[in-house]
Amino acid sequence: MPRLVLHERNRPYMVKVGDQELHLCACGLSNNKPLCDGSHKRTLDEGSELFVYDETGRLKVTSFYKKE
Image (cartoon, rainbow, N blue to C red; front, side):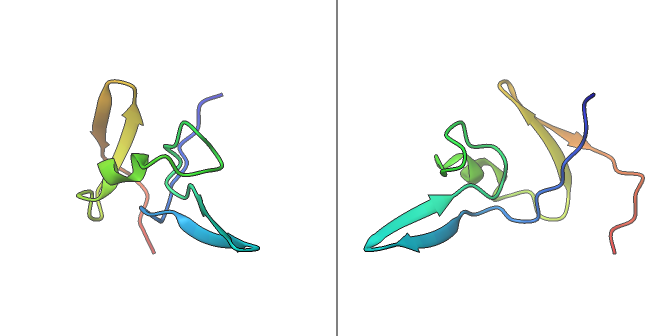
């Protein structure tokens, strides 16, 4: 069943493992999950609007739910 998942962050989480830095995907768009592949750069101009992404681009969605 399809579902809408809201991601509140448009940049990766940085995690230190020993002397190595890993960047974990937080936008949900990476093709290399759980690692970031830079896909979040497509979301930087979103503001507070809601979009759905697929391989062809993005589509603006009108939400009927109130954000609190």
